[in-house]
View 1: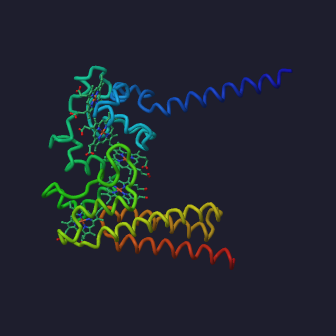
View 2: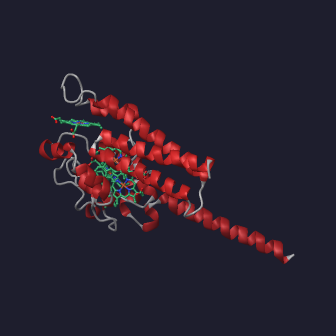
View 3: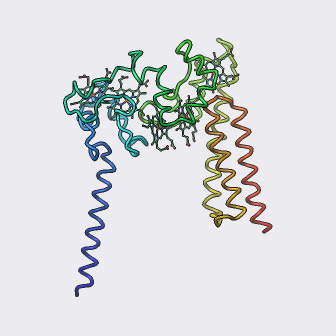
Length: 251
Ligand code: HEC
Ligand code: HEC
Ligand code: HEC
Ligand code: HEC
Ligand code: HEC
């Protein structure tokens, strides 16, 4: 008689832990007592600030506990609005961490590899000199943080790369094709990983590892806008995956 009761109470404990942890997970900031998140989550959807604040919810940054203050500054322990906002500046203020010229270094504190590649690009110099040109949020959004789809990326590039302005007018279509290729490559490698699931230390494991790091390099190269070199890395990845299938059919 006691055994089933143990099981039932164990089940209750487990499920309450699950509910509790998913509650904290979904609530990001509340768990850490972050006052920015607490107060901003109550702001009305009808205000600009409210809409921007709610856009962060559900983002990959929320899931990893990257709260408002990490990008905007301020004091996330202060409950008083004025006190919390010390150091928080509007994105139109050149001193702000989220002023468009400062965005790359703000994101770069955590995404150093992408930032480093970006600083090597022509666009970065242009951004520094004139303030014009794409920065991180052009392609990733400010708080939603995803990557533009291939059609939209072509539109972004076409703002400057077009026949009228005459600076490399082929860029938008090429960027679109390269992004499509990148996405297909990612799907391919994920499918192969599921299919082969190789043992540690096997030849297949090292091919998959090689393919994985080529894909990573391709993603990084994107931040230098060197489309040809992205394609080269993806070809490299493809070569690794081809070896993988050969190895399976002729062990
Ligand atoms: C007690 C409520 C409260 C707290 C705490 C709070 N905010 Fe705000 N915040 C607001 C309100 C309300 C606004 C709308 C403008 C205003 O009234 O100042 C705002 C505006 C903003 C803006 C827009 C500023 C602009 O000039 O466009 C940013 C960015 C911001 N808050 C970030 C933060 C960050 C980061 C924190 C934590 C360090 C924080 N807020 C803490 C209520 C709060
Ligand atoms: C990953 C960095 C990041 C995080 C985290 C983040 N923001 Fe932002 N936020 C930005 C950037 C960058 C902009 C500038 C807008 C642009 O250029 O698109 C911005 C703009 C805003 C604005 C519009 C006002 C302005 O100054 O332009 C508000 C309001 C705002 N954020 C509030 C918040 C709140 C509230 C949180 C937390 C719930 C938050 N943000 C989390 C990066 C971030
Ligand atoms: C305080 C650290 C921090 C800051 C600042 C920050 N991020 Fe992140 N970001 C993270 C973490 C942690 C993750 C989730 C884990 C990962 O993928 O690295 C993440 C994830 C991402 C992803 C998704 C990566 C993926 O694998 O899907 C993108 C894109 C991204 N951030 C862009 C930005 C941009 C753009 C900014 C500036 C507006 C920014 N981040 C600012 C820490 C940060
Ligand atoms: C021209 C568009 C563009 C710009 C500008 C851009 N990125 Fe990216 N970013 C991409 C693409 C495309 C990917 C790869 C997306 C994928 O994996 O599907 C990516 C991937 C990422 C990732 C995830 C890498 C991973 O391992 O999955 C992070 C983090 C990131 N970018 C941060 C940044 C930061 C920080 C900046 C500014 C310094 C920036 N990006 C500027 C297009 C851009
Ligand atoms: C705000 C304007 C602007 C936008 C938006 C823009 N570019 Fe550029 N881009 C330029 C300028 C200006 C040049 C340099 C032309 C020159 O060398 O005279 C350039 C050069 C380039 C080059 C050649 C760089 C080299 O190293 O030779 C590539 C590739 C490129 N851009 C890709 C892109 C992609 C991809 C996008 C879209 C995500 C994009 N650009 C969006 C202004 C822009």
